Image 1 (cartoon, rainbow, N blue to C red):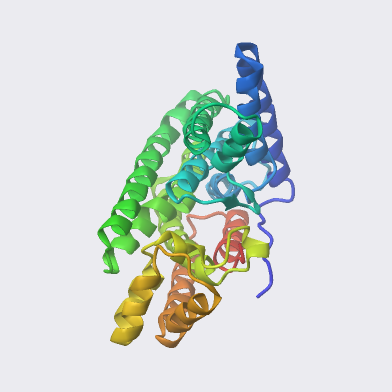
Image 2: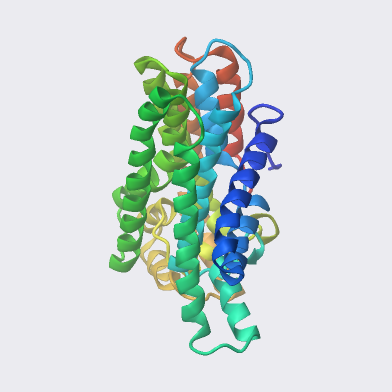
Length: 359
């Protein structure tokens, strides 16, 4: 499998990055006026947002905008700004996720809470360095969320368009937080059913990553109800396929590409649909072995046996088939005349990138 380059329009990624940089730099002037030490923490957020990531949510939002309009011209600056704000919500989610999962690395670098913890130790400060790192990273994530809301509502889009888009904007935040809460509950309760991870995938990932960004972009464009419904149907299917691909990468991904340790989902005890399916399909001894590996630090042979169980049980093949079916369903949905031709091309490229990625 080869990497797939995310594509909307040739300059969309750069436009998103540029507007993020302007907004973050503007907000950091406020923080710097309060205290330069706090600005150094804000600098971690700036680096996190500007130096990595695929900008998937802004790209899907811009595709939703384009799919709702008959003309193929570029999105105006205020629309790019509103869509780019989604990247700051993603920053909040990832910083907080890494705390919840006790992750050490993200994108091949120390996670925000670990970087702050290391600085505490390096400078020989008082108190518990790990607790300090977590405490400050929570606030860094909160800062990203605050900046996201500010960027969205002050983007300059028409007030009527902003009013329409605020509905899915607010719904998205409630859905992703609820999905995250359910995800944590599933891990703690040892859930092994498929319904729970499917529900987590639907709201923590599909709605937040694809469906609602498309919905937001469509509302900014003044889309018809038919176009919104079609985009949301596409978004749910692609978003679920995206998460299933993530489940596979969480066990089989190359750390050099994913930026996360190999088998990280097993170490974190994640109750994914891949795992639930293997627990159903695998012989009893293998299923019990998998359950015993979750939440541990498996050595090389143990990790390889766990992977073998996932493959030999048929769970991996089943999930790959489901990814293909969901992607096909999504592409069928946008064959509708409710989607502009240029928007359809953008959506096809994004679906390919989201479901066949290596990181």
